[in-house]
Image (cartoon, rainbow, N blue to C red):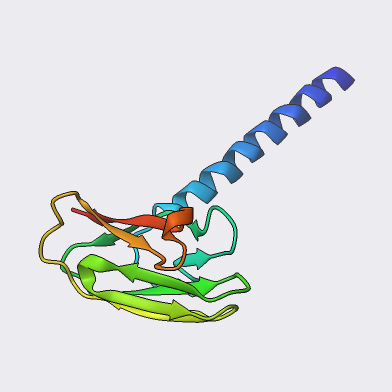
Length: 130
């Protein structure tokens, strides 16, 4: 009887850990433009600089990208295809308006990077949902 309880308890732990793992992945796949209160992109001083490294936006919809700088120095968000270049001071947030795209770029994504740290890997992608 005691062995059964231990096995059942172990199975419950495995199932709960699996559910927790599934929940975290679903947030990363969320399309920007929802009513979330938290930052869409968190920038830090250490690798990985951008969390998440990949975002998704929908076609034909203007979106506000909320960026939080969790680091101790100024970070930058540059999206060259949208002529966006914004500095975000340490410990602060910035709301960046992304204009609606009528068509996805040929590559299917937009490059996003920091003009101060791109050479260190401070970059990511904005995928275009179709």
